[in-house]
Length: 283
Image (cartoon, rainbow, N blue to C red; front, side, top):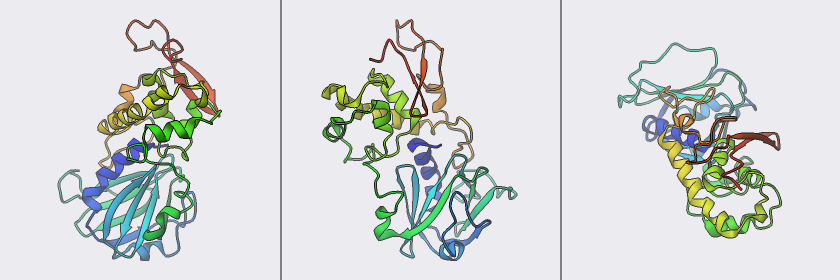
């Protein structure tokens, strides 16, 4: 499932084609994805101007001139691609419709936004913009890891009573929003912390050191266009490239990349998720 860097990469790719443009025609080709689409979604989108395109955790939020916000979740295999962009960023005419093109937005600037989702685990919803943060998918989210509310003191206080492994704690969206399995594994490797360590049994200074490392990992991944392991594509259809920079994720049995370390990367399962780490470098 796309994590924060992949969703932010898609948002940045969509923004030039969507922000400030009007949806002249919205086409909804099925009644649902993971959940039913909101009632009369096509009619509620048609004619509205996209005033801002935001991201909250792993969700894209399009604020509309109607006072509603369109929430978009890519799910396991969802892609949002742009064609016919008048800015010339994508160099493509509109492609022929595909089987799993579930939502298509034609914009006033000539761009077409297509949501394609073969597995149909994605989702869309509409809610009032002024109360968007109260939406059930957003209400309990923790602070954004790249935002000002996420800082060393906050994380230390949030983890000091947590008896779960640090890997599980960082995946808890109530503590920090948007982190997923890939980037928590990479963060803990850079920090030299074992994913098996209990969160409340890590020295405060080491917990605080996680904040800049988390930000560095996420920024590196965004710069690389995210990670393409199976289905993820950027808004122009291109792959992300951060998977070529993984230090531990999906590298079970391969040599550790730390200089002078002779150990290999191992994989364990925690709460049903694979954790990759170096037992010599991460304590």
